[in-house]
Image (cartoon, rainbow, N blue to C red; front, side, top):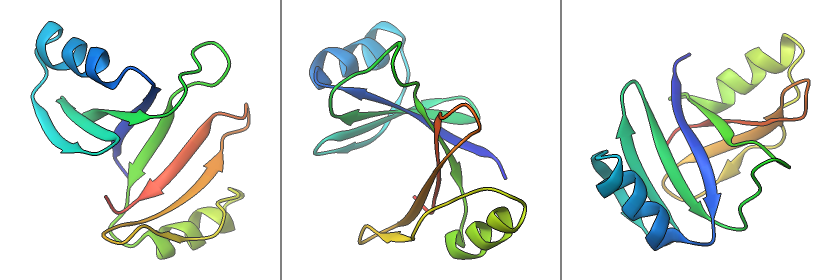
Length: 109
């Protein structure tokens, strides 16, 4: 597996987009309603609309998997606890938490 992206939740999409795109100079690679993604080396930084929670809930770490269902089965067999597969139309995902409670995800996006 390779780290695909880190998701930051924000209710200030325009400010955050300006910061990551113009201030930090990251190239924007995706712009959808409620979702903007910036190239940041081997992994991307994604902005997702929603209430920010620094200090209470860390960013979601997302691992890319072409076959989310197969990876879910393998990782759950190793002791992970990924939930049900979610079909989001053009991609599939499943969520879990690490031992400290940090959110992680497998996604075909």
